[in-house]
Length: 274
Image (cartoon, rainbow, N blue to C red; front, side, top):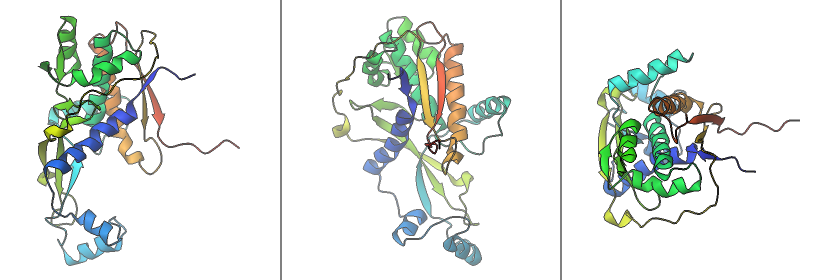
């Protein structure tokens, strides 16, 4: 029997990867050091030959840039996120990769369920509309207030204005332009952010929602995010944002009159039990 969880991982990756796809349709970025390495079949890491050569020759990577799905987060927001994560018994965050996308995915799901008045499959019909063509709002509480008054919220998230098309892909997104400094390492102080919009042709009509699952009145959001394995370094900011988003939603009254339940899973498949 399939459990009535909303799968968060796919939504997070949709927000993150489409950010890059939108960027690719609107700006042809310059060649990057990472792309050059891939073309030459080389790897760029702390132990790799090319990075060692760059260090010896001093600053050869300086000026090279790469693009990464990201929005500019305020210092207040970063502090709030890190403090909540540390208060839960974790080590301080080292970065904020995909934190905004994770947070926005949860808020959109929660608002869609609130608008649909169900945590069953019908909530999916409201997801695209939550992000466009309504009254602007930028957090769960203010968007829910619009819904409570019979209105239609247009959620602008931490990762950008979003504006989902009929397939649930953002029409607007942001990405970070990362640059190498004189020490041949990425220099955060040089990072800039670009807001981009997909062409009008990408704004396709809504795709019909399929399914018959009914809800039980309690929204459960399950995450499949990296806790272990080679991508575990991406996990902390995503889990921190997962926790904070659910806490913010529940502080604002939850969904359908009940607290939202978060269920965390590891995206790495464990080895079979002997």
